[in-house]
Length: 316
Ligand code: TXA
Ligand code: MG
Image (cartoon, rainbow, N blue to C red; front, side):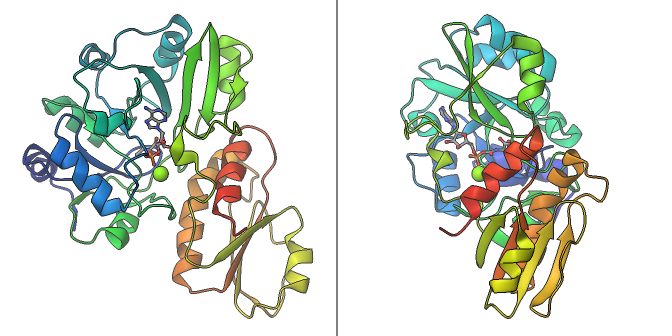
């Protein structure tokens, strides 16, 4: 159920229900971060394993006092620079945070989303919100209220339009004065390194337990998906009859088995491409193609974040 009534959403949250909420990255499925029953509803709705922890969303920095023990210096500099915005930081949690939020970890993930409606909402609530992306476990992330409706028709979703960034937040931590990156997202490597110097990329780390949500299979459409530097070659040898193709900046190949295609950014603008990627995947999925072929994006900035999502969405 899609609504623009923020008071209705506040009532839902205060009554211990989960709701769909817009953020600048993707839509979240939110609930009271201190209400274990409400948190349980999120896991059930998403069919998400409880071993996969949740990000706590706040509306103002003071709320950190009720969530974390301390804030390391470099992280604080990055938070001051990018909040509100798509940066999630892992911080030592206070006792009071339910274990259901962090899946038993001593660190809690926190971010301040940059969406006017959700910031307003967060600042009117007496508690912070946990919010994973509002998709069923392992499926394509939602970047508009209609996508959330598709997954959770019975849940109220606050309509805040299409997401500006279109890809999830970047997740970082600080250890021994170094910034570690656990998920590349809407803030690119260059943006962080310009402030703190070289970061350590933990996104391909085999330490499975750090960000369990970074499991190999993720962000997937119902049909098969492959990502390729040479979609034209793949197309010429694919036996499927209905293929949807997602190109970065222009169509480079056509064929009788291409039933639909998408171009992410005619200007080769990676931000525009990120904004369009999940939208394009949702549209192709809705057209019931047998296979989606995606052209691999350039390996810098948001291109890295998008390629990561595509590799995880791809059928292995
Ligand atoms: O942009 C975003 O971050 C969106 C919007 C809604 O804010 N949220 C989002 O949540 O992407 P989710 O649950 O789909 O992905 C969060 C990731 C998961 O991979 C999870 O394992 C990791 O963050 N994570 C959450 N809490 C953690 C913790 N305490 N320690 C390590 N990883 C954590
Ligand atoms: Mg997710």
